Amino acid sequence: MLRIDGHAYSATILHRILHMAAVSSSFEQAQVSLDVVGELTISARHITNLSKELGGQMVAARDEQTDQFVHQPLPRQKTKPTTSIDVAAVFLDGGRIRTREPGCGPGVHNPHWRENKNASFHRMTSVPSAVDPQPELPDCFRNQAYVEKLVRGLKNQAKQSSDEACPPEDAARQSPANSLDLPAWQPKTVFRTCLSSLATSEKFGPLMAAAADARGFFQAARRAYVGDGQAYNWTIHQRWFPDFVAIADFVHVVEYLYEAAQAMHHDQAAHWQPYVAWAEACWQGRVTSVIAQLEKWQSDQEPLSVEHAADNDPRRIVASTITYLNHNRSRMDYPNYRRAGLPVTSSLAESLVKQMSKRVKGTEMFWDDGASGEAILQLRAAVISDGTPLAEFIATRPISPYSPRCRSAPLTSLA
Image (cartoon, rainbow, N blue to C red; front, side):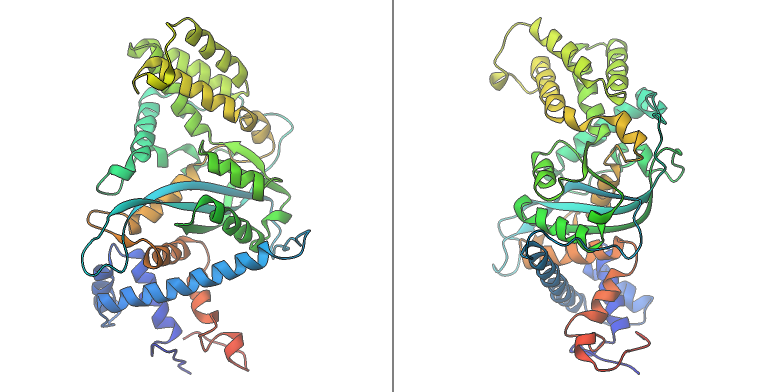
């Protein structure tokens, strides 16, 4: 039996439209793809309107779920997972999209960059070990060409707010944790779901916590929270995930160490040796000794106010590295994390940022700073998540004739 909602589309057709809207490079491309491949004639404007409407409904459902989680009586009752979780890992990273002032008529008004925060929730599996399964620094971090490319990629990512197009394929997205052939000691993802929003960090934290609870993550046997050096990452961790092991992304540690070595030794051959020694020390949990060496070098230099130093002044770069290591040293016990079978890099989060950017970021691409920008993020996050969250939402939303709230008898088919 064909069931139709207010748009005169079956759930299956509506899913195809929204899926193409979320995976195509533009709504115009989605129109072409639906016409050629799906034999469905629908205008790009109508696809845009459907995306904004259904994406907005997803936002409303997400916010309702979050309100119920946040405002339930304390202590909160943790949701039990439907499947036992060996390792629950939460990753957080920020991206950039270009937005415009909404409600100002045709054209782009007040264009500006906005950060979209992206979280991925990985159900993982690993085998804890009594000894460190990888005490030596991995070969990739000893490969000079690889590390230089990695650092360049992270720099490109950091300045992407001023770029005109999506950042290039860079090594930051190609760290060992992204490889299909993972070393035996690294935890492996069994199932991943995603969350993305233009919300502030104060609002994104409860969104993350509600999403994690809905997946049963607070009941997992082992729990990890991985982030880079952004301060809000750890504010969210302390407020909403205090029982998760906090882990500073080792790839960003490598970036800081390499840049400090470069600043202290301008000769290419001279800076490589101290970088490797420092990276190995941090990998083995000896970050205090690295800080001591950097502070010794800094004390031997001519005093200069860091606030008034040029950005490329070696003293400023080294001071930044010392600050980063001091702030994160409690989150850099990598040997213990490896023994516990937990992830030590946030490359999975950076991969998510890249996947989101493929749809929401590009030349001459602007989103309304509000409803439409938030809507496309919901659709994109749904289609790149494992499982079928978009199809399930379409079938179970209150307005849908497939929803249990809108029908008296169970349906046996979505077709």
